[in-house]
Length: 157
View 1 (spheres, rainbow, N blue to C red):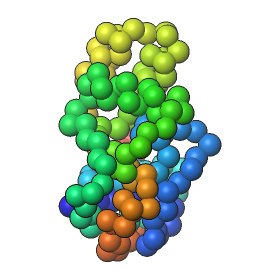
View 2 (view 1 turned 135 degrees about the vertical axis):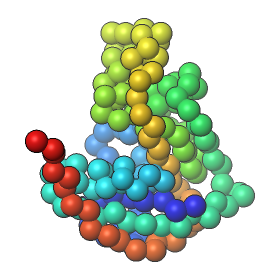
View 3 (view 1 turned 135 degrees about the horizontal axis):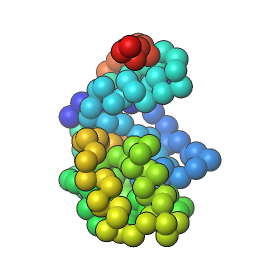
View 4 (view 1 turned 180 degrees about the vertical axis):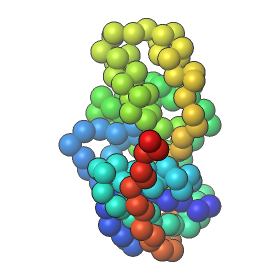
């Protein structure tokens, strides 16, 4: 499977990133199978970036959790990860809570909206994808292929 990682630089040797804030699936190295999504990640600060391409060969001995869609288990897992609760998976894959969905997740976590209201609000969202590598063993399954420049998309007037 081909995967892409958007960044401000080439990343031939991925590392597990620990951030100030918790992400959807916790700390790790995030990729996507959607190249245009990686390009948006790479240029999110309004500057040109880099889309890194990797070949992923999943190992049978990895602990993998996969969400095929946004569902109750996905929401609970993201809520736990964004609250700082650790997990023991090597790889987690599934839909991404983009900026809009993230706001709904935060409203749900803060008790401002109900679970039913959350599902009503996200029902219109377009498909996204993310796969996060949480261990060195999992990163060993990624083979760097190349990096391509990603330019900031100009908004249509």
